[in-house]
Length: 303
Image 1 (spheres, rainbow, N blue to C red):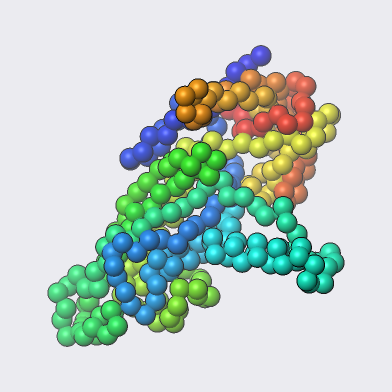
Image 2 (cartoon, one colour):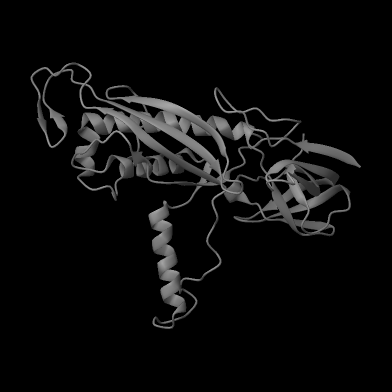
């Protein structure tokens, strides 16, 4: 039996490095589910809109537009969805096939959290502008700067996978985001024209680029839900699976710290390989290339 190492050690700093030969999500643009939380406003900045909510909302929109993640609603959105589910099961609402159901909400594999650490309305010393409600209005060539720290967290272990610091500046070309709704208060059109708003967009753009790069270093896996000659796996087009992809399949052994219960490493004993023949949104059908494939076995991109 062939053994495949799934290194779990993640090194923070300039990037992530993994122990062992692990196929990454960069193979075939396989995707993870991800959720963004409101960013903490440690800068103490105040204005016509909530900069922490704005940062989280814009990042959610940017991740969705990137097409490289399964983007889930922010914490407050998911909370509202759960309230609707609870109300539907209370018996006080009309039932039916369209009523919200519990136990079907997609879990986030990765969490994005962070903090706004510094906001400077003007980096040019002013000019002819004036301050109105925390905004610098007028003054030719006036700039703004937003500093933020961003963390990626593994929702299973709670460990920080990677972190980075970004410095957003107004006037620098970045992402042209198409968001229109707003839960952070204030006028979206005004936000897009404001220098602090532009600096926030630039910081978010840098953050999204950082998150995309981390996909190459984070292990991607799925599960066999039906074995036999025609294997079914719990990953589909939503996760980036495509016809012709080959996956290694096997049983995974988890090594844990006896003192703390922390996961130290995982090791997969490869039992065979499968090839994707048909893809739906959430599942895929595969043919067996070799080995005996059983339900509950783990799949990961083959080398």
